Amino acid sequence: MRKGIIFLAVCILSFQFAMAQSITTHQYRRVSPENMDEYLKRETTYWAKWAEKEVTNGNLTFWAILQKVGGVNQDTSPNILIINTFKDIDKGADWGSIDAMFPDVKMEDIDTWDISTNMHQVFLRNLPNHIRAENSTDDDYKFVHIIYHDTKDTGQHLAFEADKWKPMVEQAMKEGKTTIKGWGNQVIISPVTSNFTYGSYSYDIFSSLQDALSPAFSDDWTEPEGTWDGFQENYNKRNSNVYRIVAGASAPSE
Image 1 (spheres, helix red, strand yellow):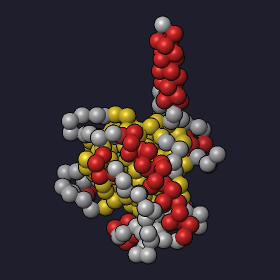
Image 2 (image 1 turned 30 degrees about the vertical axis):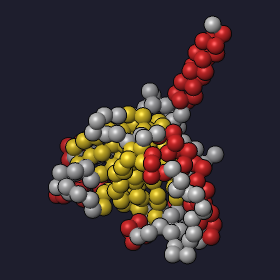
Image 3 (image 1 turned 180 degrees about the horizontal axis):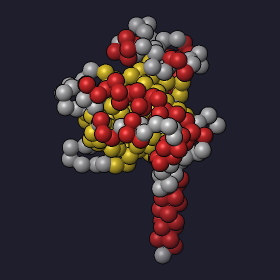
Image 4 (image 1 turned 180 degrees about the vertical axis):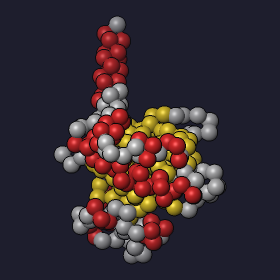
């Protein structure tokens, strides 16, 4: 009986811990080529300022709009990714406040729904793993390589990233042997379907498209011995794309 109570308590505490973590959403949209300029204009002119205010008000801790670079099925696939990190996912954000921020602008000229199609939404749990190069600035954050990971054991993969990949990237940053300016990862909470089998995602940030499309480590970089032990046996597949960072807003690091 005592073991059962202890197990129940651990479950409750684990649930409370998970609920306390901030939640991020990846919202994928499709914007037709003829509407892209207008769409990005509305996002950068109005919604970026709204996001900055929501960060200041504590509703969001991060917001970004990304534009896909290249890829397959370009005539039908999502080409915009909006990232929102909510302090409280149930409270969300004050979406309607944008109307009062721009009283002299018609809502039809601010709204982006009429010139885009929302195609997918993914929910993620944040992990305290974000790192950035010591000599980097916000101006270095121009392109991001986003990778969704499908593994047999998500926990094992996250352990690999935390215990091996993250320290390796940090060391390469210190030695100036990588073009990666920032890295981090998160756990995918939902959805989990036969068509979407990814359990986590990670991102590499670069200062140029050339860097994002080239090998991230210099030719004279040597990986620590045993870095990839057990990796391939656990890995199934991945989905990766490169995005241009159009605009962003984030709370100061604590």
